[in-house]
Each structure stands twice: as C-alpha cells, then as structure tokens.
Amino acid sequence: MAVSSTPWALMALFLMASSTVLAIPPRKAIDVPFGRNYVPTWAFDHQKQFNGGSELQLILDKYTGTGFQSKGSYLFGHFSMHIKLPAGDTAGVVTAFYLSSTNNEHDEIDFEFLGNRTGQPAILQTNVFTGGKGNREQRIYLWFDPSQAYHTYSILWNLYQVVFFVDNIPIRVFKNAKDLGLRFPFNQPMKLYSSLWNADDWATRGGLEKTNWANAPFIASYRGFHIDGCQASVEAKYCATQGRMWWDQNEFRDLDADQWRRLKWVRLKWTIYNYCTDRSRFPVMPAECKIDRDV
Image 1 (cartoon, rainbow, N blue to C red):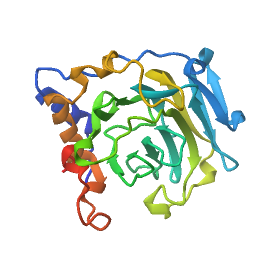
Image 2: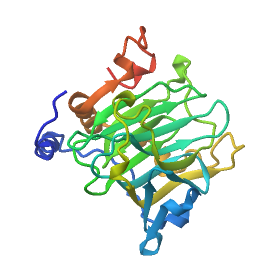
Image 3: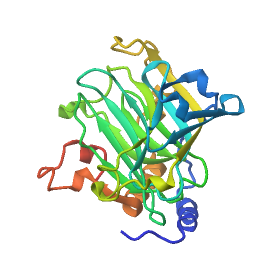
Image 4: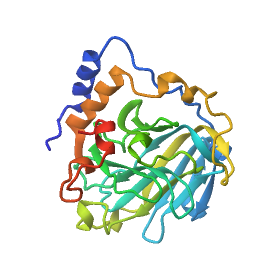
C-alpha cells in the first residue's frame, strides 16, 4: 500500500474531522522510575539507566539482546510505556512490549515492532494468544517515525475487551466473545515484558532481510513504566478488585463512536496485514473478526 508523504498533515485533518464529542481515553498514565515496577531479566550489561531510573536503554549487538519484566503479575488493568525505537537500518531487529502468562496454555497480548531498511516505514505487529493459541497477527504502518521521538504504547485490558493504543489512538480491539465459545484472557495473571533482540529469521520480509551488524549497537529507549493493574499471585483466578477500578467501569467496556472512527481510519489507511482477511491461512474467517469489527 502507498504511504502518504505527509502523514502528520493527514492526521491533523482526520482529527479535525472527528466528532466534537471527544472519546474517553484511558486515565492519564503516571510516569515512574524503572525500578518501581520492573526488573532486568537478562544481559544486565546491555541495559543503561539515566536520570535516576526515569529512562532506560536496551542495547542489542551481535553478541546478545536484552530484556526486562514487571515485578508483579496482573489480572486486568492499564499498562503504558513511552518507547523510542532503534534508528536507521534496523532490518531483522525486533522490539517487543507485551503481557504474558507462564503456563503451557498461556495468554499473551503483544506489541512487536519489526525492524526495517532505512527509508522504509516502520511496522507494528500486534497479536493476542488465548489458551496457548495465537495466529491473530495484524500489522500496520505507523504514521510517524518511531525512532525520532518517544511515543506512547498502551494496553487496556478488562473483562470485556483488550484495546491496543498508540498515542491514545486505538489501533486494535479484541472483544470478549464467550457467547461464541471463544476464549478470552480472563483468568491467568500476566507479567509485562519488553525485549530487544535479533529475529532476522522472520522479522523483515519473512527473513529475507538480515541484520546488518555494521549498524550495531541498536538502542531502544524507554520512559514511563506505568502500571495500573490488579496485582495477583500467579495462582489467582480472579481479580479481587473486579468492578471497582476505573478501567472496569461502563465507559471502558467498549469504544465510543469517535474511537471506532479513529480505529477505522487506522484500518483503512495503515493496515498492511490482517489475519481476518487471509483466506490462505483461514479459509473460514475466524469468528471473533466480526465481533471486533476487523472486516
């Protein structure tokens, strides 16, 4: 698909054309130091903290990537991170920010940023696993260069829906469709994870484009580290605060009209792959696609 040479101008026009009744965004995230909610998990020497832990850099070189995870496990909540992706020729490099449980039939909610050759648009892939089953990939181009400044990537997860946001614009919804017999992530506490790693066997053009290590080190930068969730033990099957948190309230059980319009704009203008329309993989469209308005 063609990408506009003036995405910011188009974005401004789109927002002006939106309803004058503003959508209800998630509650404003509160920025905290890295150590409040997270700990490093591997390759500690490939991480650097600045400004009292308010900023973190992950470093990938030809020897190793690195990553971190949340201290707690959560059943539902609002999770947000400001991320600036590696710059330049990043083919083969993946930056991931996601929620995941730890058992065999795990649940997972993914942001994955797929590296690109210089001059090509960045690709954001999202996926949702329920009961160990994924294969729900959607990919979009971003309407900005995510390596030039921090942008905010958020997940709103409650008993009714999972919503992926980029700078408070919804880019994907996964609804609870239990009435259709479909599984939804509702009873497995999940930790948050982020990592920077080499995935040149699949990440860029299906693995055709390999990582150019002459461009290393690759650096992803983080701020914010916001978590507002129901913390639970790994064995917990429900959230003790169910129904009492702001993200449980009626206005967050669905998108409003303005948010659906913004999501439609993302799908029409920026989507480059949607599993719901891939008949080579799914001759029969998955049942959740109509509930999620993916088609």
